[in-house]
Amino acid sequence: MEELIRIASRCAVNICLDTNTVRVNALSLAAALKRYTRDAFGFQRVVHFIDGRFAALAKTMHGANKNEVIRLKDDLLEIIKESGIRIPSGDPYAYKRCAFLLYHLTVLRPFYIAGARDDDPEGAKKAYFNAGVSLYIVNLALATIGYTFPTNKATIDLLRDLTFRTLSRSAMEAMMRTAIRPVPDRTK
Image (tube, rainbow, N blue to C red):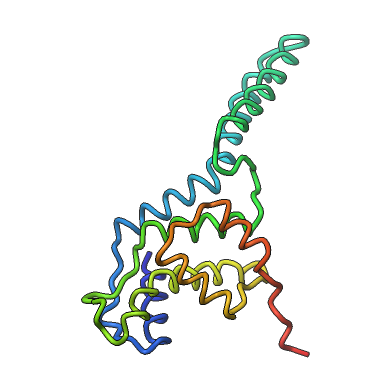
Protein backbone atom coordinates (compact mmCIF):
# COMPACT_ATOMS: atom_id res chain seq x y z
CA MET A 1 0.00 0.00 0.00
CA GLU A 2 2.83 2.39 0.88
CA GLU A 3 4.51 1.71 -2.45
CA LEU A 4 1.29 2.49 -4.33
CA ILE A 5 1.07 5.82 -2.51
CA ARG A 6 4.66 6.59 -3.56
CA ILE A 7 3.78 5.66 -7.14
CA ALA A 8 0.83 8.06 -7.08
CA SER A 9 3.13 10.85 -5.86
CA ARG A 10 5.66 10.10 -8.62
CA CYS A 11 2.86 10.27 -11.19
CA ALA A 12 1.83 13.68 -9.85
CA VAL A 13 5.42 14.94 -10.21
CA ASN A 14 5.57 13.60 -13.78
CA ILE A 15 2.56 15.70 -14.78
CA CYS A 16 3.68 18.75 -12.79
CA LEU A 17 1.14 18.55 -9.99
CA ASP A 18 1.87 19.35 -6.37
CA THR A 19 2.53 16.11 -4.47
CA ASN A 20 0.96 17.64 -1.36
CA THR A 21 -2.41 17.49 -3.11
CA VAL A 22 -2.17 13.76 -3.91
CA ARG A 23 -4.64 11.73 -1.89
CA VAL A 24 -5.23 8.01 -1.64
CA ASN A 25 -8.47 6.67 -0.27
CA ALA A 26 -7.08 3.70 1.66
CA LEU A 27 -10.48 1.98 1.94
CA SER A 28 -11.05 2.18 -1.83
CA LEU A 29 -7.52 0.98 -2.53
CA ALA A 30 -7.85 -1.95 -0.13
CA ALA A 31 -11.23 -2.86 -1.63
CA ALA A 32 -9.84 -2.68 -5.17
CA LEU A 33 -6.88 -4.90 -4.29
CA LYS A 34 -9.12 -7.36 -2.40
CA ARG A 35 -11.54 -7.63 -5.33
CA TYR A 36 -8.66 -8.03 -7.74
CA THR A 37 -7.06 -10.86 -5.76
CA ARG A 38 -10.43 -12.54 -5.35
CA ASP A 39 -11.06 -12.40 -9.11
CA ALA A 40 -7.54 -13.26 -10.23
CA PHE A 41 -6.64 -15.91 -7.66
CA GLY A 42 -9.95 -17.03 -6.12
CA PHE A 43 -10.37 -20.05 -8.37
CA GLN A 44 -6.77 -21.09 -7.77
CA ARG A 45 -7.35 -20.94 -4.01
CA VAL A 46 -10.53 -23.01 -4.25
CA VAL A 47 -8.81 -25.63 -6.42
CA HIS A 48 -5.86 -25.81 -4.04
CA PHE A 49 -8.17 -26.25 -1.04
CA ILE A 50 -10.31 -28.93 -2.71
CA ASP A 51 -7.28 -30.79 -4.08
CA GLY A 52 -5.70 -30.88 -0.62
CA ARG A 53 -8.83 -32.08 1.15
CA PHE A 54 -9.67 -34.73 -1.44
CA ALA A 55 -6.04 -35.92 -1.62
CA ALA A 56 -6.05 -36.43 2.15
CA LEU A 57 -9.37 -38.28 1.92
CA ALA A 58 -8.17 -40.44 -0.99
CA LYS A 59 -5.12 -41.54 1.02
CA THR A 60 -7.43 -43.19 3.55
CA MET A 61 -9.32 -45.17 0.86
CA HIS A 62 -8.58 -48.05 -1.46
CA GLY A 63 -9.81 -49.38 -4.79
CA ALA A 64 -13.18 -48.29 -6.19
CA ASN A 65 -13.88 -45.89 -3.32
CA LYS A 66 -10.62 -44.05 -3.99
CA ASN A 67 -11.46 -43.75 -7.72
CA GLU A 68 -14.95 -42.49 -6.86
CA VAL A 69 -13.50 -39.78 -4.59
CA ILE A 70 -11.17 -38.66 -7.38
CA ARG A 71 -14.07 -38.55 -9.90
CA LEU A 72 -16.17 -36.63 -7.38
CA LYS A 73 -13.37 -34.07 -6.94
CA ASP A 74 -13.04 -33.61 -10.72
CA ASP A 75 -16.82 -33.21 -11.10
CA LEU A 76 -16.92 -30.70 -8.25
CA LEU A 77 -14.11 -28.63 -9.78
CA GLU A 78 -15.88 -28.62 -13.15
CA ILE A 79 -19.11 -27.39 -11.55
CA ILE A 80 -17.20 -24.65 -9.73
CA LYS A 81 -15.49 -23.63 -12.98
CA GLU A 82 -18.88 -23.17 -14.64
CA SER A 83 -20.46 -21.38 -11.66
CA GLY A 84 -19.60 -17.82 -12.66
CA ILE A 85 -16.23 -17.29 -11.03
CA ARG A 86 -14.73 -14.28 -12.82
CA ILE A 87 -11.50 -15.98 -13.91
CA PRO A 88 -11.99 -19.77 -13.87
CA SER A 89 -8.31 -20.59 -14.26
CA GLY A 90 -5.59 -21.58 -11.86
CA ASP A 91 -3.06 -19.57 -13.87
CA PRO A 92 -4.79 -16.71 -15.75
CA TYR A 93 -3.03 -14.90 -18.55
CA ALA A 94 -1.12 -11.73 -17.64
CA TYR A 95 -3.36 -9.49 -19.74
CA LYS A 96 -6.42 -10.86 -17.97
CA ARG A 97 -4.90 -10.16 -14.56
CA CYS A 98 -3.90 -6.66 -15.64
CA ALA A 99 -7.34 -5.96 -17.07
CA PHE A 100 -8.99 -6.93 -13.78
CA LEU A 101 -6.54 -4.84 -11.77
CA LEU A 102 -7.14 -1.83 -14.01
CA TYR A 103 -10.89 -2.39 -13.82
CA HIS A 104 -11.02 -2.40 -10.03
CA LEU A 105 -8.66 0.57 -9.67
CA THR A 106 -10.66 2.68 -12.11
CA VAL A 107 -14.07 1.73 -10.75
CA LEU A 108 -13.21 2.39 -7.09
CA ARG A 109 -10.96 5.42 -7.85
CA PRO A 110 -8.60 5.34 -4.86
CA PHE A 111 -6.22 8.00 -6.24
CA TYR A 112 -7.24 11.65 -6.53
CA ILE A 113 -6.07 15.22 -6.24
CA ALA A 114 -7.40 17.19 -3.27
CA GLY A 115 -9.38 20.28 -4.19
CA ALA A 116 -9.81 19.40 -7.88
CA ARG A 117 -12.48 21.61 -9.49
CA ASP A 118 -14.01 21.67 -12.95
CA ASP A 119 -13.03 25.31 -13.55
CA ASP A 120 -9.38 24.65 -12.68
CA PRO A 121 -6.96 25.24 -15.60
CA GLU A 122 -5.28 21.93 -14.76
CA GLY A 123 -8.67 20.22 -14.42
CA ALA A 124 -7.99 17.61 -17.12
CA LYS A 125 -4.77 16.48 -15.43
CA LYS A 126 -6.59 16.19 -12.14
CA ALA A 127 -9.62 14.46 -13.66
CA TYR A 128 -7.45 11.84 -15.37
CA PHE A 129 -5.20 11.36 -12.36
CA ASN A 130 -6.77 8.12 -11.05
CA ALA A 131 -6.86 6.55 -14.51
CA GLY A 132 -3.26 7.64 -15.15
CA VAL A 133 -1.95 6.24 -11.88
CA SER A 134 -3.94 3.02 -12.39
CA LEU A 135 -2.56 2.56 -15.89
CA TYR A 136 0.95 3.30 -14.61
CA ILE A 137 0.58 0.60 -11.93
CA VAL A 138 -0.64 -1.87 -14.54
CA ASN A 139 2.35 -0.96 -16.72
CA LEU A 140 4.67 -1.68 -13.78
CA ALA A 141 3.00 -5.07 -13.36
CA LEU A 142 3.37 -5.80 -17.07
CA ALA A 143 7.05 -4.82 -16.97
CA THR A 144 7.75 -7.61 -14.48
CA ILE A 145 6.92 -10.10 -17.23
CA GLY A 146 8.58 -8.15 -20.06
CA TYR A 147 5.56 -6.34 -21.52
CA THR A 148 4.36 -2.76 -21.70
CA PHE A 149 1.28 -0.79 -22.58
CA PRO A 150 2.44 1.65 -25.27
CA THR A 151 1.92 5.40 -24.87
CA ASN A 152 0.14 6.81 -27.91
CA LYS A 153 -3.12 8.50 -28.97
CA ALA A 154 -5.05 5.35 -28.04
CA THR A 155 -3.71 5.70 -24.49
CA ILE A 156 -5.15 9.21 -24.22
CA ASP A 157 -8.50 7.89 -25.44
CA LEU A 158 -8.27 5.06 -22.93
CA LEU A 159 -7.56 7.49 -20.07
CA ARG A 160 -10.65 9.47 -21.06
CA ASP A 161 -12.77 6.31 -21.22
CA LEU A 162 -11.45 5.05 -17.87
CA THR A 163 -12.24 8.42 -16.31
CA PHE A 164 -15.67 9.14 -17.73
CA ARG A 165 -17.07 5.69 -18.60
CA THR A 166 -17.27 2.39 -16.81
CA LEU A 167 -15.67 -0.18 -19.08
CA SER A 168 -16.48 -3.84 -18.56
CA ARG A 169 -13.88 -6.38 -17.53
CA SER A 170 -14.19 -8.15 -20.87
CA ALA A 171 -13.68 -4.88 -22.80
CA MET A 172 -10.55 -4.16 -20.78
CA GLU A 173 -9.32 -7.69 -21.31
CA ALA A 174 -9.77 -7.40 -25.08
CA MET A 175 -8.01 -4.04 -25.05
CA MET A 176 -5.12 -5.43 -23.00
CA ARG A 177 -4.82 -8.46 -25.25
CA THR A 178 -4.35 -6.28 -28.32
CA ALA A 179 -2.39 -3.42 -26.75
CA ILE A 180 0.38 -4.90 -24.66
CA ARG A 181 3.69 -5.32 -26.41
CA PRO A 182 7.06 -6.80 -25.46
CA VAL A 183 9.38 -4.27 -23.87
CA PRO A 184 11.90 -3.21 -26.53
CA ASP A 185 15.45 -4.37 -25.98
CA ARG A 186 17.43 -1.17 -25.44
CA THR A 187 20.80 -2.92 -25.16
CA LYS A 188 21.16 -3.20 -28.95
